[in-house]
Image 1 (tube, rainbow, N blue to C red):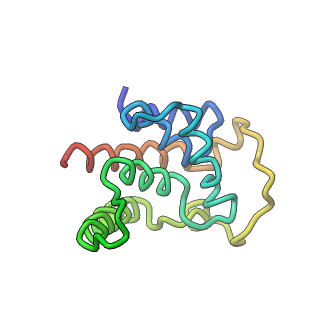
Image 2 (image 1 turned 135 degrees about the vertical axis):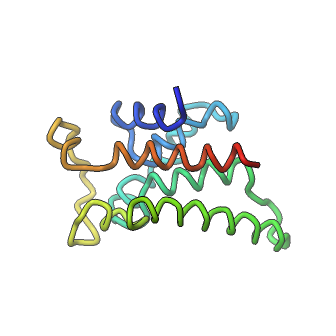
Length: 148
């Protein structure tokens, strides 16, 4: 099973977009699944259903950060290198989907939405591209990790 397929399966289990992507890599990152789910839980719905940066994109960045993030606030070279990779992954995602913003990806007109998550029904999955987006985000970060 690819990381993208694993992320898609987690999303279909009911995890949010960020959790699905981050969770697909938790073993590789040395994180317990529950810890990974808690850490990424607030990023779903474009950050708490604010419809900002897509949760799948946030999850993609979190995975990369765990592998190649910096720890010293004075290491400007490490920071620049990390940001360069983050921007490249965002660009790839945006080229394939037209945006990295949840609201735009979902075709919504309102920025903020009710914090109550929608029920995961068959209708929900038909109207949302999220399943495909989490798969793509996980595949993108996996590709970048394998290049390094």
